[in-house]
Length: 346
Image 1: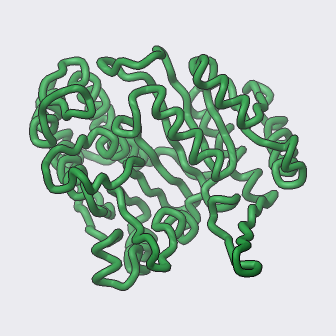
Image 2: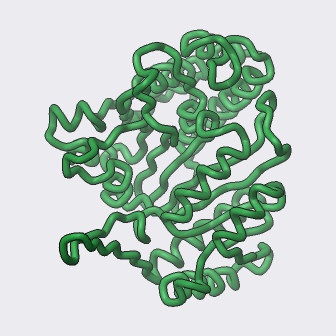
């Protein structure tokens, strides 16, 4: 089981971490994040690695093996949004990254933020998504011309591993309920196995409430009242959909962090797209990338810096100064970065 936080670094300690700037607005939001992380007091020696469109041009691969090797060496990476070239025969960068490093657990914390107006208040849940199997893994082939078969692979080992991860996360964070999402009424074998594994793992945690929801019912209940949910765990494709749905409940992908954990490595990432329409214009909102970096800092032991960043985000959103357009302001990347740094000391 991945330890969600390590030792606290002594004053002045510098840690080497991998940085994947990505493309589109990726370099802009990661540059802003680096400035704020440094201002928060975390001493990071960033090891820059390539991924995205430029990497496809220079390395012949949007996710070169050298980038995976750097992450294997340093164990932890911060990733900006990356674009996989479409129609060029390349595998999804995210799928290759997660499978190549066995980053089996995607973690998406979703909580209401002050200053962000949404239909709901007091949302505080975590989406735990199995990251390596299922339909989203991209196992497809042509049966005959005009007929494509996609394989949805579910294994007992992966199912047990992700559900146990969800229960351990709940235990470590003081959460009281884990909800398993499935469609076992239709996919009786694959989701049936997953559900059976979930029930067996739940028996090891009698002090945590276990609940089961069909995927369609879960979507309905989330948009009616998300506050009754705590930890949600599910397979890959369902998790891709539900995690974005939940982000929409608290203000969108521009304010929600994300992380991917394996037994040895962890990659923290902004989960929004590369937004090529505003790339290079200085308009990008860095908060999702910054909050992902705060998760990373907490993971490696810079807990004080992580907490200062989270508090700065909240003060900045409440203060309404310098906010980017997606947050209802008329500022830009530079103005919001300046406010986030100023609010570190508030």
